[in-house]
Image (cartoon, rainbow, N blue to C red; front, side):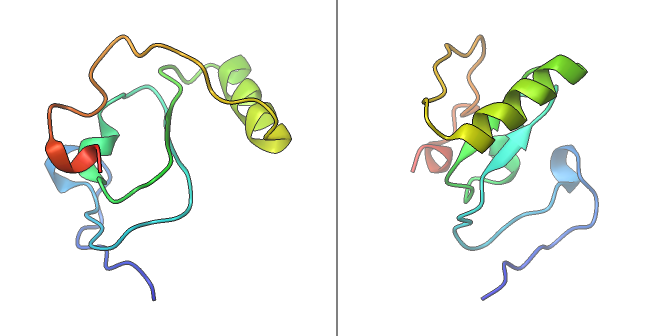
Length: 86
């Protein structure tokens, strides 16, 4: 079953809305608030900046899968919404 994407834009209120749980991980680069636009994403990673070294480290971490992501978010990535914590 494919998710039903309602919008074709990818930012803010015009971001795609997903109406079913997504099993693929999602990464937010340079904006920690994308989870509010896609609360059905079950694995959500914030990298907080688009530098090449950061993206390389993200890919290395995803490829190895051995260690958990350990970080303390400087913002509320859940945006205060209940459905982003489910």
